[in-house]
Length: 252
Image 1 (cartoon, helix red, strand yellow):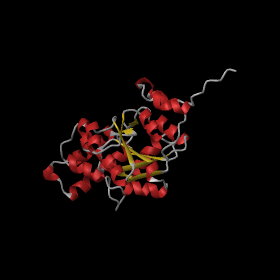
Image 2 (cartoon, one colour):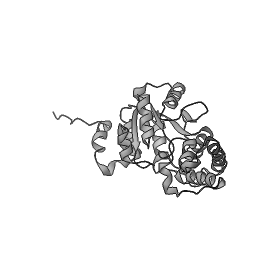
Image 3 (cartoon, helix red, strand yellow):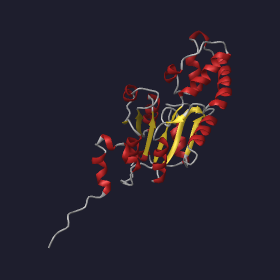
Image 4 (cartoon, rainbow, N blue to C red):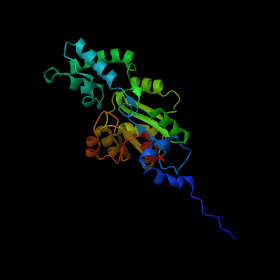
């Protein structure tokens, strides 16, 4: 009597398919559902979900112009951003002009401009809307942790990802320390209780990797953002993701 050959379950093919570079991006669109490993993925929005550097630069340059200081090319801004608006404005000012009163004045100009123009040039990175849909459709919660002020973060994620059921959207708030202090991660976990072993933190900078390390959660640094792979590795990224397909596999 003939014996049927054993069938390899589709989910068992994932590790083998993922080693083939030309299939990396296909995995995000397949119906192959491997065993779920993560229950919550926390994203830094700027440089990870959204290419927002042109609008950030334009707002900072507006503030500089209003206060009579020279501006910077947009190409210079990736090294300025990442630590919140106050630190951004401190960095773009000449060193001799940095004082709390001037920075506070520039902050008001920045928010005046950015509030009207934050989505002029900002757009999601390729594959990000599909990634978020794939994660949430599989029951994986998603959240945002940003050093940008709260109103702007909420506006951007709701504008660009209106159909995503965010577990939490956390920006910079009065009295709460900015990243890499892990308080923002703990705030998200208080709103969406999840074992730390089931959390993946995704960002594009050393600040993000350090935030994840201090919060004791797994980290993934993306290569398409504002900072270098070298910086990500220097800050002990657990994973380096060159595509949204890689992020999906890390979460599943």
